[in-house]
Image (cartoon, rainbow, N blue to C red; front, side, top):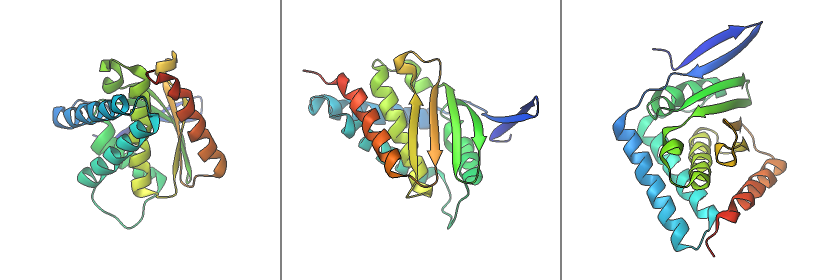
Length: 185
């Protein structure tokens, strides 16, 4: 089975993941979310700790699941993580833009998010996790979360960039600050 299925309509092409649920990787992810939640609670709501924990987990899953290679293209990367990580996690996503330096995606199904007690924490965790996956292949890359299911959106939008900019860093900081309203007083 191909990791991404191409769908063409009205001369436009999108790609969709082929989700399935693999319990060992799903359990590892649930455990990592629990660790991030514990750090969040112990720190009285430090959202950056959630992102850092999730990013480290993403890097670890990438190292455990993906064969080492000297160079990546965005297409190789998204196909590989879809096959070896996203699909086994049951993540349903549509890739709407796939270029040499940018990927736009909309995640419409995420079991971890669906099962989480705290949707904001799950969104931050997902962001950090995906950033860890991206930066494992592209150390200067950046992920931008465009909208979130935790904020009532029907999907969570992400932009993956081969090369992050200062503006992207500001966007990351703004997203973290928006979620800092989760802090427990």
